[in-house]
Image (tube, rainbow, N blue to C red; front, side):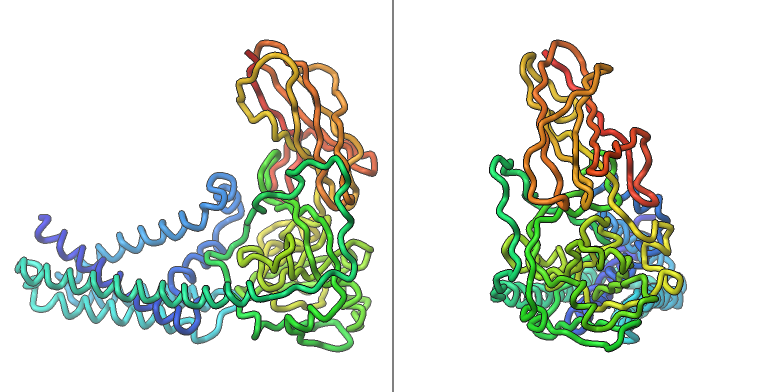
Length: 493
């Protein structure tokens, strides 16, 4: 049985592997976004229901993309193994199976928001190679399978071809990526015309995030040539413009410390962080173009097709909404939007922080729903008041005596007035707040707890600058951000 099915299955898998590798090589050399694996993965992400997306982010974190690509590869292996077995019984099945593979990849590529007609070509090219190989190797009936020498020869040729094509594709990607990295490193950012305020004395070294979180739908990080990058601003404006990266650097830049957080963040979750950002203020730029008073939404589009809608009112109300060109004293990292991203303090990332931005369109909420709004998320995305215990860690074993309880709280734009800590069911106690440069950053807090032996429950809540207390009721992130008091347990010995 293994002789009759195992070898044909392997021939099917290896033929498909060579086809996929060839398709990826063609895409890498011409248009990386057209690669079949990325195209299919992107289509799966777009089609996945919101609960599935939230489960993936909550459970897998930043590993969600590798897991998705691995799952796609597993499904492809099972499918092509089946096609391989059947093609040695009916030769036309190999052609049909390859056609299904090619059409699915092409359809997925064309369904992407930033798709071009050419994007179908790599998948169809790879499918043609896989189909041809299966047709040739399944003739005459079972000979290549029964004859061990011919089978080994075919397996070696297919494996070698797949490895060579796949390696070449990765080499092309690395060369392209290396050139982009070098061009980024060569950028000399000008000094800010309006620099950030010096950090207050007494601030904790952990004020800036050691590594800012990353949550987005891009399966591979876009690598954009800054020398050819353009930002188009159009729609309900008096005049349209197209700006280069150098055009932005010639404008007066502002520098600000701002905390950014993702709407997918669960209570106590990690998807929040603070950095020092350098960018072009949006409000004066848009004012120069003459925005139609009826325009109430600014739609940002990224190079891979993501759309993010931001209320125009949040750009013109005095907050430091900007087109970011630098982060923590350097050009933007590739994974955080190089060469330019948008940032709107006080809004969750999905509503005001488009990465890899190439286009801004002035429109209305009535006329257009951005990517996440189409999937049921709230349209405006204001950040909710939140707080988190970072120390001690959940389920920690600690010694009796004086214990430092510490964490962060945030309510960008409103600021934090108070943070309180409760141990078990005792009264709430005020924590000490460390100084902050502005209301657009999180606040670090500290509480000295006289810990006694036994198990204990610690809770935290914050009061924002308006006097509103953080809600106790637990609410999931969907559709406009989580609420609830972060609570941990610890055992004191």
